Length: 467
Image 1 (spheres, one colour):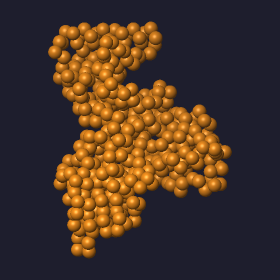
Image 2 (cartoon, rainbow, N blue to C red; image 1 turned 180 degrees about the vertical axis):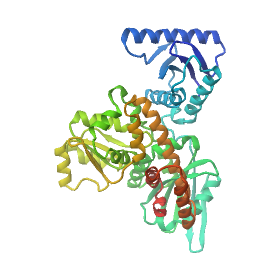
Image 3 (cartoon, rainbow, N blue to C red; image 1 turned 90 degrees about the horizontal axis):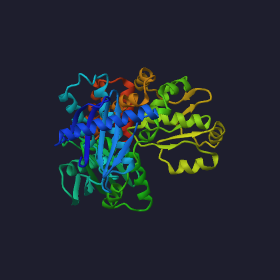
Image 4 (cartoon, one colour; image 1 turned 30 degrees about the vertical axis):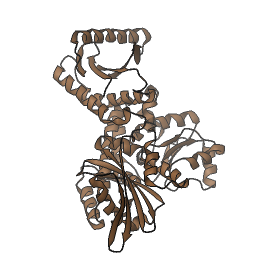
């Protein structure tokens, strides 16, 4: 990434590596030593870490990872980072570096190892175009094909753009045309094309025997971002359909202007929360709550306002992979309006009185999970033993340290979900066989696979017809 300098130093101020490498090593060593002295002063005098400082046209931020400090230096300019993007960049640096620096001794870490660790961080940051722009979809390649469906096949009557995925996905839409007849006017799905090594977001607009299919092609590096904001894309499709904007190129243009709201967890003051608190306040069936949060089912948190807010903040560590509507506290007067404007994936806090009145109105979704903080009990359908075990083993650790492990496990879940979407490109019998074989041989427990399938269904409805 341009205008970005990463440096790895020990907590004692010794420069271990820089990326890109500085042309003036002496200057870099002196600067790192000075910054380390400033950090030590801040900690000893004010009893807290310095987060950042600015000088001339530079902004310098500090990411502490175990016994090391990663110095992130950026040039201050209008076309670099917004405050939100900079916070996410720092979060990504920490998530990338912390596992590699865990239990490492600064005195024995070689310069070569330090350089490789920074190379890994730099790759992760550069591969996520989220940090280049507020609109991560803007760089995707749009294309379109129009099909006329016939009894003996289909014909392409119009095409805009190029790419092998156009014909491949056009054939898939025709093969599964009966599924699309059951859907709304605009349908959005995600497909992983493993042979082409990229991901395609597909929009289908169907009118009688004519289908318009629009595509946004993404490099694999944007998989995680695309997956996370899929609920936002889905909601936007509903709005466009209501506005009678159904030409797929116009639809794609609107979708590419969507701004990524980022990850809620990255904006939380982590010193105020802990996994052990969550384990203590939810005495029974905590795994059910975790399953629902991870898969984007509606979740209602019932209790006192301050405790509800705290629990929702802690639960957000399990939503780093999926955009969810958070409503920290609703009253009877505004709950219906908030629910009407929200996607089905939401976490909503309220008092017991409001919840009981919603039940009487039959306003609680049938697949919703209820976290009753007053009784410490959770009511829901499925349980996640896999992530519950992670919580149990990491609940006494620092929340930021635990969040790194949870984040990487969530990425595994997303990767598995993407693989499952690729089966939808096959003929139905072959797809079912491939999915069953994948489930049988996947190196994960059944509860993990179940979550991956549920997430895959959310972003590709054809998968639902394969299970």
